[in-house]
Length: 396
Image 1 (cartoon, rainbow, N blue to C red):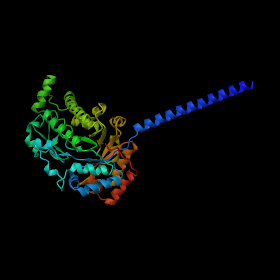
Image 2 (image 1 turned 120 degrees about the vertical axis):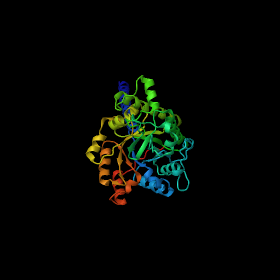
Image 3 (image 1 turned 60 degrees about the vertical axis):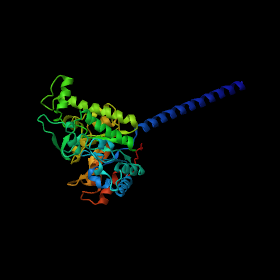
Image 4 (image 1 turned 90 degrees about the vertical axis):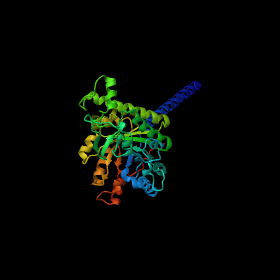
């Protein structure tokens, strides 16, 4: 009887131990799975700044680039977007530009050095991502060598006029449907991602076309061939708008595939205007790009002078949809030479974005500290308060 009792007790004890062990393993697996899920979905917020042609004297000076990158790291930024395509010219050593008659000698560094290589190297030393920015997209000034050398690449309105007024002044528009235009942009992009140790490539609201354009001979012939109809006289005709927007989307899909074939982990970034204006006025269906999984990072430019209109734009469903899939941020204007923006307004807008789980990117570097009524120290203190701790992004 004693033997039987001992055996039963041992059996029950072993069963209890095995049950607790199994339960512990189950809890561990659940916790690990939960932690893995969080790790996969949690990503450092975008804290970026565009470095524009207005920052040209900084970009061309090695010492100033060093100072800029150190300052951004001290203030816990994590991404810089240096301009590489502006006014029909490039800001790096480009064989593609030379072949197409747009010699880039104007935009070398003061020491004759390669600006993009220097910015990339110095940014990486400070653990900042470098994502070159094709600021002008399909725009080009009428006086640019590109426009003069290739008039057949330009598009026009129905009345034959070719220029429009933008924030950059009077511009022409390269025809985004023309294969040679597409080849130029593709070749420039592939040249950069092949030659430089950059972390991504970015296209903004000018990778588009104002909706009144597209009445050039090439596009008319292409549309007529595909639809058996002439283009509608109304540039806002829904079918005509959709056809042109889909053509731009098809090009972006192709561009994405070309980039990923060379550098699969490269960030394919887009920085458009708010969706309604982007699609309706500029034929840029960036929401479709997000749904097609060709966008790795989205920064929506919301340049508004007051907080209520700013919040109305950043809470749009298109942004919320994108936010569920990819790192998403809001572009905030930090000031212009003739239009300062207070650090208080910058802070209110940035916090509104951050409270909604969105990153921020500022336009542009020099205006972070200058072109304002506050002192440099006050401005920097304001940005320090926005980003009190590090949020490093993994360089590629």
